Image (cartoon, rainbow, N blue to C red; front, side):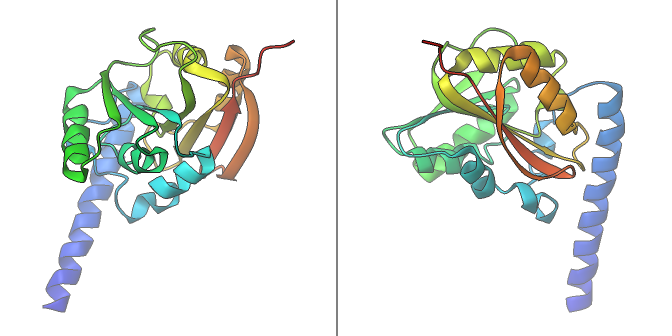
Length: 214
């Protein structure tokens, strides 16, 4: 029985690895969003270094904050973030795939969470409000966006002065972006680096929107 279970686990990891490798090849040819049927890709041991609680801590989420989960996917970070900010706070779950938002809605309903709002949009489409968010979280999503400069400009526009966008990348992600790439984008849109966690294989970089000069 144990041998059969062990073989099933190995087979599962083997299939997951094969799918990840195939998707990595496709993603290098064209920046495509991860489809809903792959929504659980990071909710397994491969993604333990980017667990939601770790990213929430790195972003400095606190009760009462307004948070943008940019490219929320299946809500891996959305739901825990909503619990942290509480009823006085708010989380906007943004994704361009209706199937992903359907999954997040179902998760929020199951958890009895009412402080999550849903937004069907891609980043860079100028749909976000100005000076709205205390924090924005982008986890393994930037490489899926064709116009990264436009996306980061919109994020910067949507942050309150002093607000932070927390960008996380994992090297096994098919859409992995180097820390050098993030720093160049930050410079182009006027965001200032405040902290880096991890290493080149798995990292989070926090970028702050400057306060207005007196």
